[in-house]
Each structure stands twice: as C-alpha cells, then as structure tokens.
Image 1 (spheres, rainbow, N blue to C red):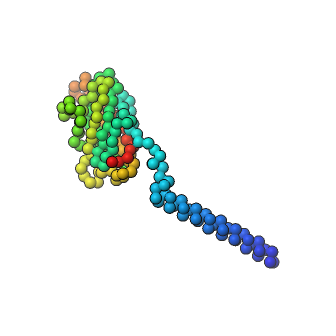
Image 2: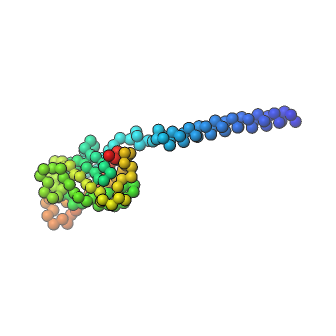
Length: 171
C-alpha cells in the first residue's frame, strides 16, 4: 500500500510543481501584455491605401485626432472634382468630412485635381466630441469613401466612388 501512496504523492507533487510554473508564466505574459510590450501594432508600419485610378502617396499623410491630411495623385487622363468624403473609424461610423481645406495656393473652393497631378487634401472630422479618434498617440485605422466625377461630366450624373484606408499613428 505504501508504494501506491508514494506514487500518488509523486504524481501530485509533479502536477503541483508544473501547475505553479504554468501560473507564473501566465502572470508574466499578462504583465507584458498589460504594459504594451506584446502590442503587435508597434511593428506594423503606417500606410495609406486607395484604389485605382486615384492613389494616396504612402509617405505624404497625417492622421490627427480631429482630421486627416493626405496627398492624392490623379492617374486618370482627365481632371476630376472630388464631391465628398465620408469616413469610418473604430468609434465613428459614416461621418462626413467638414471644412474641406486645401493648402494649395490655387484653391478655389473645391477639390479639383488635374490629370497626372497631385493635391494635398485636408479633411476635418465633425467637431462633435464623440467623433474624435480615441487612440491619440497610438495607432488608429480609418476607412474612407471618396466620391468624384470627371471634369468632362458637367452635369454630375456619373459620380464614381473609391474606397481607401489610412492606418497611422494619431498625432
């Protein structure tokens, strides 16, 4: 009988020792995760992606708490007029950009991009406090939908839509 007790005791001590070791490992992983050491977003680079024929220059964009600024390149054989931009983030859905701004000295109240040229677009999000990006100082992803028409389409009947995404550190 004493051999069975010794084997049972040995098995219980074995499981207890490995149980404590497993618990210590879980606590260590939890602590590393809590302090952001295991945050995978630190290793993902900033990006700006937009579908063809318009492109977003990968090095020319800024994501702020209250808006976004990005460089758009027109790859069409015709000039375009951007008629609207809506965005969605992790906390806001389908918010229209307000206060279209343009740092180009030739700005005339609209976003016109001639063929084979670029334009810096600044889009301020609505000023409601609930529409600000929650992750200031960290990484945030916003998706946007841009509607445009060619300059030849003077009636505006043939508006097209293009989707894009900005993933960057919020300033």
